[in-house]
Image 1 (cartoon, rainbow, N blue to C red):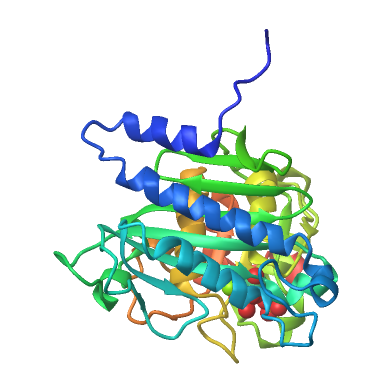
Image 2 (cartoon, helix red, strand yellow):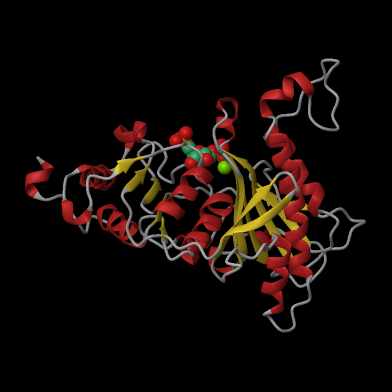
Length: 343
Ligand code: AHM
Ligand code: MG
């Protein structure tokens, strides 16, 4: 019998928790509730094109009522799956300006959840990969209702992070600080099964991923770095190939598996870039570092950034360790193009 073990995500989480003496099971309960929310979101995402014909599950629209947008649906689904379990003291979502409190009549718990319910949702109509991203912290306030203070923690304090990618198959990729593991949803049984154990990012890749339409607004270091990637140099495998989905989860997932670099830099129009530190930068940085990669804002490790605002943006350079290091050197102007290549 040489076949692999069949392990559901729930079993995996319980086993991980068992390896920590004194663990209460609280955390595995939290992840179990989250997984349920992801399955509900997947069910709707997988028939996105049918919404105008059939309506959402449980929501009539045959009589012409307004159909809820998928990102709003995903946002509410996560909140409703997580508000009553007693694991969380507060939540925050990319879709909501303020923190989301636990209703008074439910107990509060030790953890804090931040999430981007449906990232890359502008891709939905074209049937392109989208995803859900989450980040979990321990609370810092002592008890009762959680607050903004619980949410505004630097990324290195995350206890777990992950994403769900709704792609050609649906996968949940997560870390609790002990490596990165991927689970593929078997729709016929409704379970996420361990398919990618201990994902490791290659030290160096051959792919760069960035929205090059923004070239004219890029700072000089960024322009030079991309030119460098396009130069020919057999020893470093250049020129790199360009790949850009425009859906962070898809672009990061590919980077995790194949290596290379994903970038959303700051530029003259938006010096802080586009992506959000709390919902996109931090969870992706935790995952990528756990897989042996690197994540930076060009000047500082993403996970060390002390957030000031819930919806703060950050430039992002993330992926294979060596690629991100070279990108940082260009951004910090410690490295220039070779004379011959610059011309
Ligand atoms: P969203 O949160 O509004 O969906 O925006 C985030 C998305 C990311 O998934 C993706 O990496 C980026 O925006 C793409 O932006 P652009 O279209 O500017 O290249
Ligand atoms: Mg987003």
